[in-house]
Length: 275
Image (cartoon, rainbow, N blue to C red; front, side, top):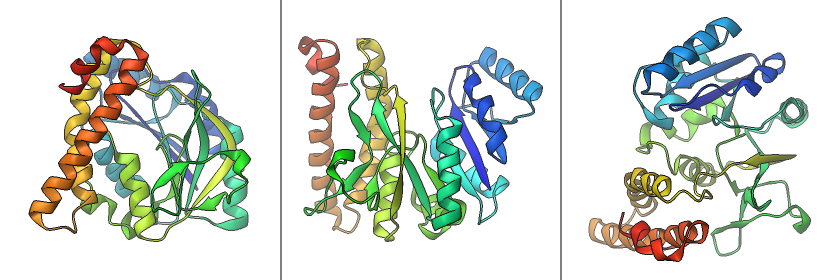
């Protein structure tokens, strides 16, 4: 059975989610909102539509929500569909996943996610010969079942796999990098992912042109970035881990600052860099 988990934060529930209920075993809303108005509205919406609603009246992050739902609502042989608050996933995708589960029983599935503003494919990325992930393109005619990385929106994962990759024991990420971390664990545990031929249009958080919003998101991202890069170099000694993670983090900050500058103005580059 497939359960769908949508995590929201200080926003109203996406009403498009109701359309998915006919094809999934249970729709679960995990509300990380801190705004009392949103919490009351979302609780009433779920009560009216008979949707499972979870809220702790504080923001507990993504990893906590995954663990809570995985351990309290799913059995090992259930699948969990991860959705974000503005998802455009439709029944077409779920039908294709169901069909492939019946025929192949793969452990993980992802759609082809594109930026709705630029139509550029952001997910999946495929492992290349240099042991790094590069953008995957449909026209490449590469395997659709391979070592991929991607975003969490639309990811379908066998619940038992969370335990097998020790995701909940080792994850120290709050919101950002949870997808990179999850797919990195897949790769390390030799778990391949099946790409479903379905276009998922996404509104990526760093492609907006609001300078103040971008700065707030960069501030929020800092701790997760450092924890993720510390994890990447965890097998090195303390000093080498410290050096490599900070080099990688600084490089990431530069590239992210350039990306944000392109969306607003290059005069704000140092505002982003030194957030």
